[in-house]
Image 1: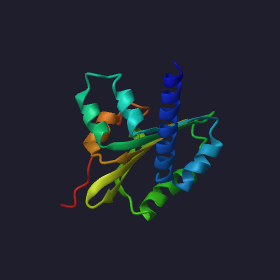
Image 2 (image 1 turned 180 degrees about the horizontal axis):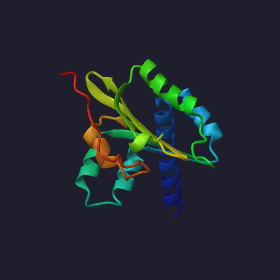
Image 3 (image 1 turned 90 degrees about the horizontal axis):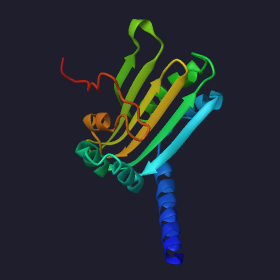
Length: 182
């Protein structure tokens, strides 16, 4: 029993170390801090690769999910809820978009709610050697903001397979990749 406890403690230490390293490389815009400050409820967590593999075993029939996780180093989820509708700082939300642009990330999606609603969904990617190395999704609803970052080799299609798992919201309508051709 003592050996089991020691092995369990060792695994926790390794996971925390990997988690800390993953968080050090995560790009989080300053605007997210401002949005976090105004939230009445916050849910935040980060899963490293080994935690994602373990969690994916809860859905053993989903081959697409396991394939996607093989290339993912970590997932970070931030969910902020606000007491009343549309009370979050719209300027802070706009600054997040600007910070990603300034940092060289490419915006894949800019979806606004139907009928002129104020809800938005943004998807950004970071490229390294012409391959996607990071993805960030920001979804702003009337009284909630969901912000998810995924580190690792992933495609927009892979992101849709992660939707609905690990706190990552499903993206209705999928992700549209812009074309340079007219």
